[in-house]
Length: 434
Ligand SMILES: [Zn+2]
Image (cartoon, rainbow, N blue to C red; front, side, top):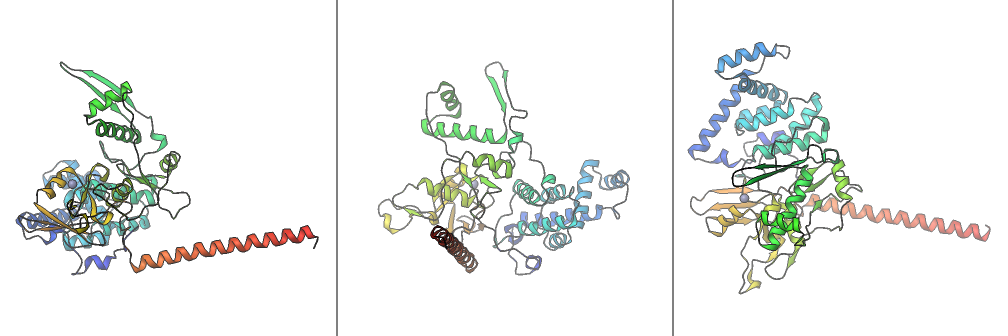
């Protein structure tokens, strides 16, 4: 479910929500904004005045002027050129200077190969959403998230120009059946005391492999190496579940989201759908007792997408499920229920941070979380980012959509019944010789 589209005018308004680093009075935040502004001005100053200018000649001038290598100078030039193609984004950045250099470079690299101006305008519109928080004090997402975001958006509008996966990326967003087995291999390299075993696997297979190892390690309370030994000797039997999230609106889903893999494309979706063994409709729910159900875990992982500490990008499938308001073992009725509204994903590091009392968290009904440091009083904000983000919300817009859906289903069924009865009447007529 996508949130309300943020318009260009919204982002420029004085009242528009700001990221934490834009609002903070701390010296590093203020200096960071100043640095961003200089980097932006530098990039715009490095852009050639005409697209027909000779690249090498232009870059040699820029490189000499900046005292930087050709490659580094080229990065500034590229940012300058691409921002000129996206005037709205450029104006927003000029006004707020909230994007660091690496973010701007990631955007420029992704947009550079796009030729169609309409496509660039679409990407620009989506980027305005990425670079605009929905609430004050959200934390700007990192370049890896931005890269995945750009991969997804570009895949939608210009699939052949989708940016490549980041080398060593643990969250590859593309996994096609065609890429499977290509370049896969296992190698052994003997050292003095230990032998190194290395494998190169297609992302899907690697993901499955890790999932099974994790499952065995948890089941046997052992290390991953021991888990692998169990797997080789066949001394353990575990069931590993991999959840695939698909929108219900499509009869044949075109894309699906896998915890740990992210959004996968149409071909991969089709091949994964073939392996589905059970289907579940997800909804908020509450269970009795302390331990959340498997259904709740699946729901919350799909809703949160990552660890909920602001700015943390550890994927939800690798997180603990934490009771936001602690479960009261003495008096379960008094609060801290095992309800999806009171559960969220936290990586081990941030789970410990919360348990230690260094940060307090409050979750609003719309899923926004407010994290307040008990030491400094700073409050940071985080939003859900999984494929089911916003699922628990019930706005007037959602009400309208649901009502429309119910009505459509009702009328479809009504037409089917009318059609069936017409057919029956005609059959009866024919049999009676009318
Ligand atoms: Zn975390």
